[in-house]
Length: 120
View 1: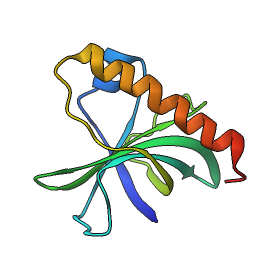
View 2 (view 1 turned 180 degrees about the vertical axis):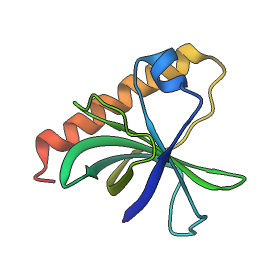
View 3 (view 1 turned 90 degrees about the vertical axis):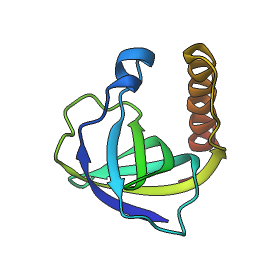
View 4 (view 1 turned 180 degrees about the horizontal axis):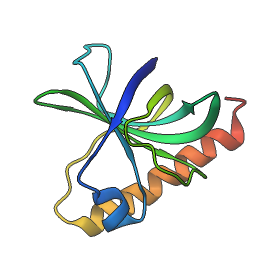
């Protein structure tokens, strides 16, 4: 499945707490979208990056937080295309930021594995 949206300002937790900056895209609620963490390919201005995408339902729709592997730059207010390739883990609630950090690191490794072992 592919989603398209404009990057909005988030809380900065991914970058500030975990060293994993994310581009946040608010999507209109879509019943086909499943909460979880995905290996993804994100395209900006005709260039693509392997990515980790986290989708979760919020009051206003579906929030997609995507980390572009190897990208360094400003994505605010830019339109990006996110192709969800494979779900790598479910969405989990955590009791501590330390538990969340361990999960994020594991998800990053799972996504890297997907890209190393598939021709996506």
